[in-house]
Image 1: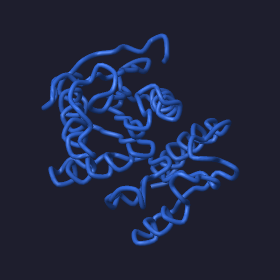
Image 2: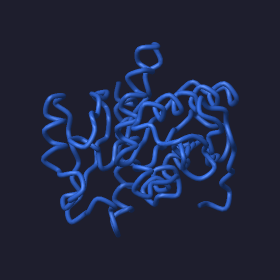
Image 3: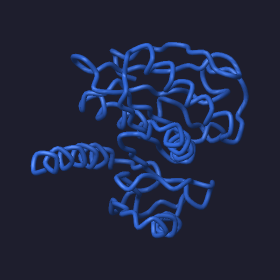
Image 4: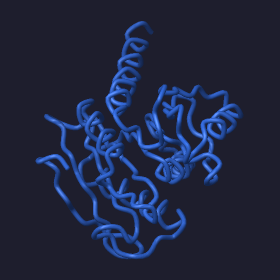
Length: 215
């Protein structure tokens, strides 16, 4: 965990939700909600992929929030197969946006966290508050019912992922005509490949700014 990380507790339907907060230099441009992998298989807000996503989004100017799902760390309640986790994540977003006066929201998740955030994005969109962008790493297609996501979503997957097969992700993405970025030689946990994730996220935002400048 970064030395500047703050741990806070927010109210949730099943009790307190523990959230790690990383603050950018200056005024945040928005909120980045980062979701960790499956809690029943050791997933926590301290996961290395999750921390990498938070760090790069802070570098891009976002206030990064990493909640622990139910039953993990100091978050109360029990694992709810995604249902309660979706509700809790929406609650964290609403509370932090109100507290910090933030409107723009970015969603970034790893593995089980991608499933949760796909449904969070759908709920936000139904409310007329779609996420500015999404980053999905190790998308849990084929494991859980990952919902369709916005067309500008950055999807990153490891070539050698034997937890969530690349073919399952391609099958899910094909229905949306959604590109998938494959990191050669990467396994599910992206050992020794975290720098690639960071560079891909930075590149996505740089490309977006260049497109805006040309418009």
